[in-house]
Amino acid sequence: MTAPLFDTAYRDAFGERLTKAIFDVSMQEIDGQTVCYMRAAELIDAMITNAAILMRDSEGTSTPARTRQFCDELARKLQRRIAQAKRAEVPFETVNADWTH
Image (cartoon, rainbow, N blue to C red; front, side, top):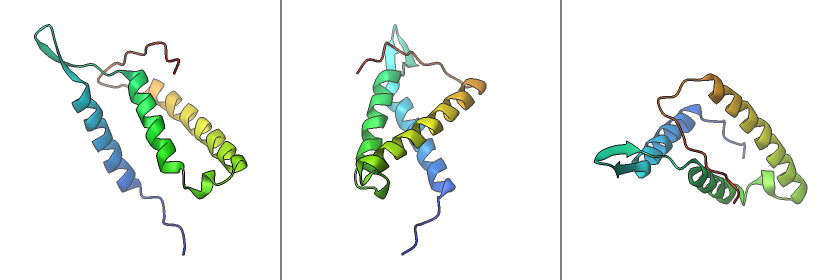
């Protein structure tokens, strides 16, 4: 069996729905106004937990060495995406508390 090709349409659809879910969960009533207050540390922690669950049975994490390699590659990808995000305009801002968990 050959591995399926990376499906960018699926990734994009998932990303759109994930963003909508983040906004939906983050909506709050503050001083009589509905605002979207994103708790960045909690959101990131939840996404990391779910990524770990998705990767637990992956061939890419089947051994400690493969897990380290996967994490190294993920760190590089995350660094690139953070750099891209810093250059892009977004229609909101996040509040990043001291994330120590």
